[in-house]
Amino acid sequence: MACYPGCLPNPRSGFPDTPLGESQYQAWLDATWVVGNVILAADGLVSVGGWLLGRGVSMAGKAYQVKFLARHLPGTKAVAAMLRKGENAHVFFDMATLSRVEAAIFERGVHTGVVRGTERYGLRFKDAIGYQLKPDGTRIPLHYGEMKVSADGFYHIMPRTGPSVP
Image (cartoon, rainbow, N blue to C red; front, side):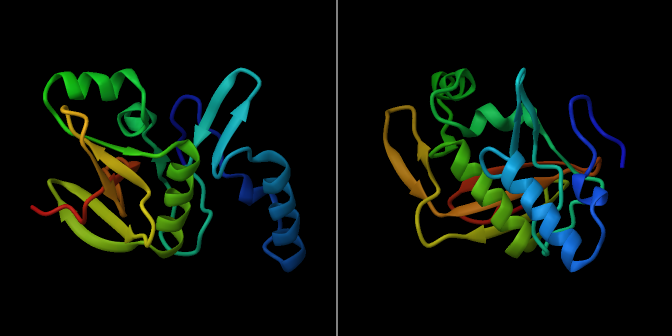
């Protein structure tokens, strides 16, 4: 798999495909990962996503599109800019929630088709995962997570009211 600048190769490949290898890999994850599947290093964010965590959606050849991260986290300059332009912002409660939603979509997400040129996968959650923030300050709880995957393999996760429609 070709890596984008700053990403890391799949660490799962360094452990044998055996029950012992799986338990060693899980121990490595427990010792290494800080929040969900966001890996931090001494100099800051190294990689978000990009590895196969669940058994549902294959991560082979995919990497998180970090440039969209700020659009979906509260209190960022990107969200403030959207609101100033009169646009609604769809934000997760925090990075940990985004990470949990990402893992859940890879584990149990449903392919919802191709919308506006990108593959879509989604999952509805019982509890809110974020909110739609309107320019007037109104907040609407969001219970649906969606992953957009572009043809080049880059993806990002966002909270939504429901699946994207053409």
